[in-house]
Image (cartoon, rainbow, N blue to C red; front, side, top):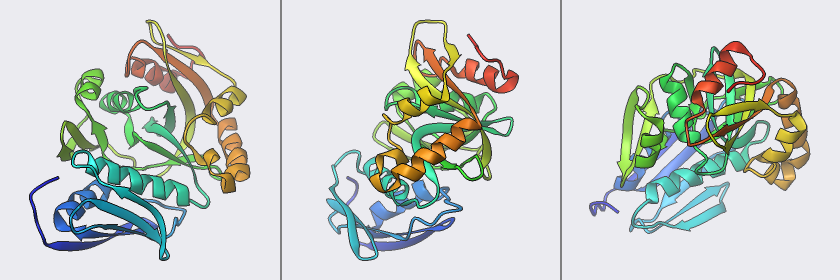
Length: 282
């Protein structure tokens, strides 16, 4: 998992309105703090998260108000990505007012586009290509949405770029590799949104034959499809307000299904829809 280092570290992080306190061996705490440094949550307070890593680096747990939220065994490889995922999951589960969906998100001409898809559907590679083409980075993992204002906010954790992701995306957007873990590069784009932007489009990523095609679908269709993805709708205590909130957001936006032959192939048609407002692209 790294060089043996018995020194310990404690890092309090102020991530906008969200406080996260990291503690454990320095070799584990410092890279995780670097991955979280650009993340900010505004307009909601999930409550402070205390994340502690055991001295031997083999286990970690997250706590809130002296209550254990989760506990995991850390693998020898991939432990950093696992911990980042646990922090993200904690944040989204603890949101009170804002909503989330597992999705990539970019801003094109100042308006937000949300790319919803299963793991492996091409969210990261599509986001990377869109940002390289001039879009502004919001997230490649979580879209944080404000139903009251009809906006999507930045959730700026670095993109997890694996070799196959880089191949699908082509040349990566301007940015810096925050850290590497095995074959994964955690890359933070330079062009990041400074704050929330109005939502313009929701896109459901799907596989299809060439050419890539973007077709409108009804808001009801999109809401049903989104229920199958990880979002605020998965939390029973939020089901009612999440359903109403997503309904409000979808009424403000266009909904599409993007069928493309391989990840990122549809970036051009998303750009065209954002810039021209055409109903059917492809």
